[in-house]
Length: 99
Image (cartoon, helix red, strand yellow):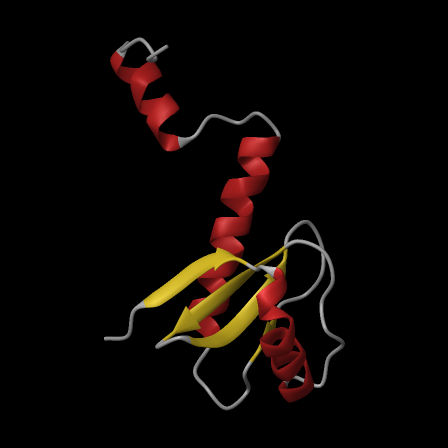
C-alpha cells in the first residue's frame, strides 16, 4: 500500500509541475492547485477552481486524481459556505459549535 499525500502546490513545485505537464503532453497548469505525491514524487496535479488534472502516464494515477478531485470539491464547498461534515454532525446531534 502506497501513502499518497495531497497538498497545495507551492512555488518550489514549479519544476515538478512542468515535468508532469510534459509527461502528460499538457501545458503547465497555472494558479492555485493541489498536488498528489507518493514517496516524495509528484504523481498528479489539479488546478483548483477550473482546469483538467495532469498526471504521470507511466504510473497508476487514477486514485491520486480522484483524491485531488475530492479535496478540491471539499475546498469549493467550504468557500461557498456549505457546512463540512463536523458542522453537519453537530447540527444533527444538536451540539453547539465552539466559539
